[in-house]
Amino acid sequence: MTTEETPDKKGPQDQSEAPENQASELKVPPTGGEEDKLRTALRSFFKLFERQPSSGGGDSTGGGAPSGGGGQADLLDDPSRRTFFKRAAIGGGIALAGGGLTYAGAKVAISGRSVDDMDEAIKTEGTIKPMDQRNVILTFATSKALNEKHPERNEQYSKLQNKKFHFYEGASHFEHRVPWDNSKPGYTQLDKALHHAAWNPLKSAETWTMAHSQPNTRVLGWDQSDVEKEKYEFKSERDAAWAIKSAARVWGAVRCGITRRDRRWDYDPLYDIEKSRTLTWERDFPFEPKTVIVMAMPMDYDAMATAPFWTAEAAIGHGYVVMAQIANQMAKFLRGLGYQAVGAGNDLGMSVAYGVAAGIGEAGRHSQLMVPGIGPRVRLCKVYTDFEFVEYDKPHDWGMAKFCLSCGECAKACPSNALPKVEDPGSGWGYQPQYEFSDEPGYTWNNHTGVLKFHSDAKKCFDFWLENDSACGNCVTACTYNEPDYWHHWLSMASTTVAPGFLHTLMSHMHPMFGYGATGDPSKVKKFWETGKGMRVNSSMKNNIATAGRS
Image 1 (tube, one colour):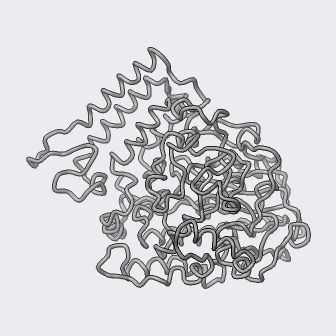
Image 2 (cartoon, rainbow, N blue to C red):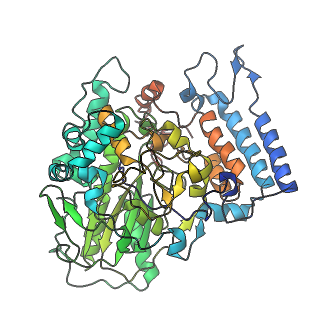
Image 3 (tube, one colour):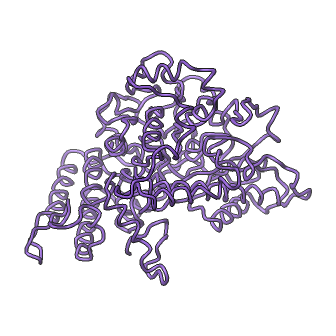
């Protein structure tokens, strides 16, 4: 997972306003009598979850594990719960109808509200300078030269955390520091082998450093010698956009958006970690980009559910492999049409900011892009190109970032306390970081300030990675929007834009109550290693949007 911080969607002007009053602007939340009706409907809804005698003589609770069962992980797999979930979805639909959600409104809610003004979609304060890539956590941590140039960063972090810490020394042994223990689920030789195998294609292709934002790697190179001399001419800008998105789909992307290049979201200067030198767009990049294509591909739901165990790294590593593959293919496709193009993973620019600009999602409290229907369980890649005869996408508002103001499940699950909490000033939403030690001079060197968003302390995040000897992923797993591809989850998604703030809070509590989002659960590891059952026939269509759940 990248610890890169990125701009978020538009938020409330008054940060002191209570989270429940910061609901979506798509509709006016119900007030007075309307809100009373909604609360009454919700009370009826929750009566569906009251404890009922089980057929086995024990008790079964809607919000927890069946007695004698294996915990929350079993809740989703128990066939006897299907009626329960149907009733829950119907009850939720009634409650949402009380809140004013119509069929037409639901369609708009799922598609998102188009935001015409980019400055409305990503609000900034003053003049925003591009992020210096040398200040990106994974770039700095993997560069010996940068650590030698800035010893004060290691010294300050060590002092404030009261521990001996060194970014580069830790990164040098990352993923090979902790031996496996076959008595600990999630940390066995089996899990470690899966972890390393997932990353192996990129390591074999000498391209895995693109995860650290290394530019110009073998698979995502800058060479333009294969650009066709004859330029293909599309009949219309829309035809061009559809062609690009059709190509992205066949290669495995589940979302694709197209936006104009915005220098604010590019890294500048760029930094070549391997050669310890800065690069400029004007002197070193092969052409002047006009357009950025952003593509999202899903990570496996059941593997990510095991976070922060090593098992989850299999989904992350494979996600990076697919990132590089699709970015490589899209760049080659455009060069074959006669246009210059370079693929990128975490390098060249801030993927989440470009994802917001391209209209494929919103940035959340965890600094990840949340994609409707999948949540933050995606990897992002980009293609920079000089092709500009294309229909550009606009940012969209699904109300997800505003939902984050009342949620905070990712922050609760964060083992390093790196994410802002709901109880923080402004719920952690602001133009400047408000996390612990953010008032210490020089401590926020890794943040892109002046952008209205949730600022996180990626240094603490990386610290836990080193301790875990693997990326974490807890924030992705715990996110309320990270759910399997079931229709009642789309119903919940559609409700976000019209639900008042107090309902957002209830919805965030319902997520773990239904058995989703638990982290550090060894039973999830056991479940993952059983997801291969039935794969010869695969009648349940496992891997549909990277889920292995039962339909």
